[in-house]
Length: 142
Image (cartoon, rainbow, N blue to C red; front, top):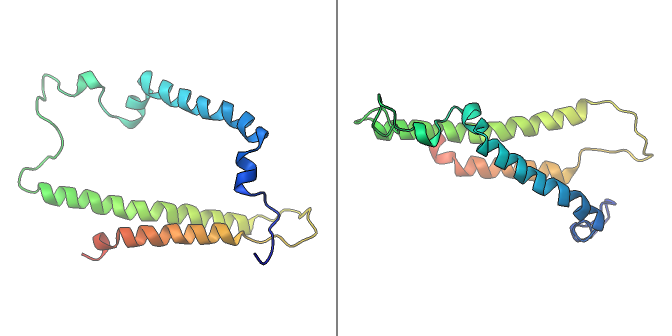
């Protein structure tokens, strides 16, 4: 190791009592919030999906998966391409937005050292974008 960034190691963080005190509250509260979100029916309202007793109404007794009988493969392929484009575009936009926000903010620097963009975060973000581009490349170039 050529140098140290001054950050704590992962093992040091995980074995810290402070970490477990904080996360003993946050992890169960996230679970309870998700459970309440689904059990109260708010998830159905937010995402517009039918409740389990509303899948088959009197007007519609068929499974509403695909609207066309003869172009079902085209509909699925179109959905997969949409998913591929958005699966690559959304992380790219968030990653580029976070980089530009970090570079654009002009805050007074309380440290005496010059603080730059964390290269590790940059490399992980670029690796994520590259992996997503490789995974979805067959949908872009067909």
